[in-house]
Length: 108
Length: 117
Image (tube, rainbow over all chains, first blue to last red; front, side, top):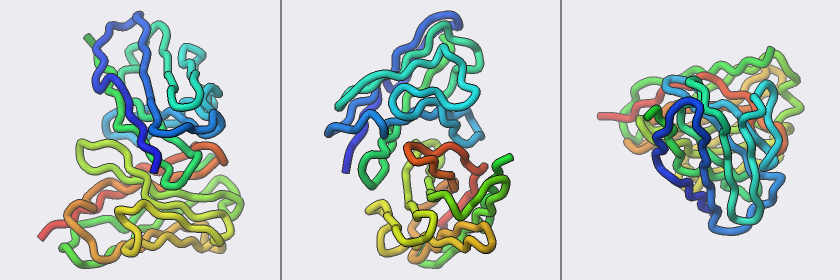
């Protein structure tokens, strides 16, 4: 099983700042099969990024995915109030299709 | 528009069974692989199971293997999760989600399953 470790667990920032979220895999993951999701309280997760760097439909260009191998990053430039949420990475390379434990992005 | 609506959740005693349903609309259900993902209260996401579009391939998380069965009825545009021998640790919101090949692009709003005596 591929274990995904996200860091930090919690990130406290102010609107307008930039955020960098990390996702590290226990073994190499194909760039094609790494995705990021956003989840707000009481809501289902929403797909943000797939294939490491491709934004899903209607996702603003301030969300940028990058990485390869075992290290992947979600960068959010110029945080908007609606960006404060929990973010999860997921690998689709090998079953079980594991998620990271999440990074909570909170308002400072 | 794509819609996924889960149902069948509720309170059940440990050791009992429950079946969840996910009614799909707004897309060609029979062309998409489908997943179940769960989230325990206050916890992160846990992938549970997947079934290919024709039902020929099914995979499970180790935590549910042998107890849960994923299935689908393409004539009814419905995905199922049969959950047997339920445990307290199976308590969670269960989401069904549509596969787009490299990620899951649409999710239902979830169905809460509470396992408690």
